[in-house]
Image (cartoon, rainbow, N blue to C red; front, top):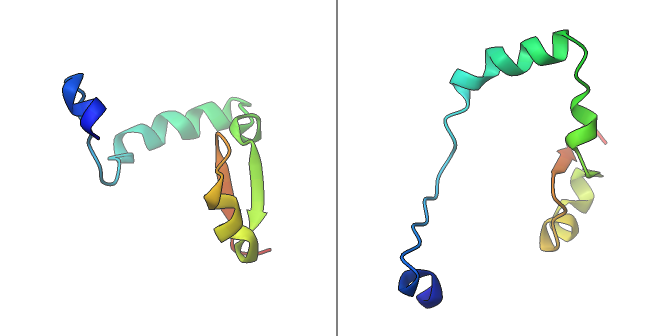
Length: 65
C-alpha cells in the first residue's frame, strides 16, 4: 500500500455498477458471443476456497456442482 501511495495510485473497492452494461452483454450473447472464452476456470463451490487462494484470470464458482 505504501508503494501505491507513493506512486499516487488510487484504489477503489466495492461492487461494480454493472446494470448499465447488462443489455450490451445480452446483445453480444444473442449475436453469438460465447462467454466461456473469457472464463479461465470453473470450480465447484466445495473447491472455491482453494481456487480463491490462487485465482486465475476469470474464476467462476458453480454452486450447482
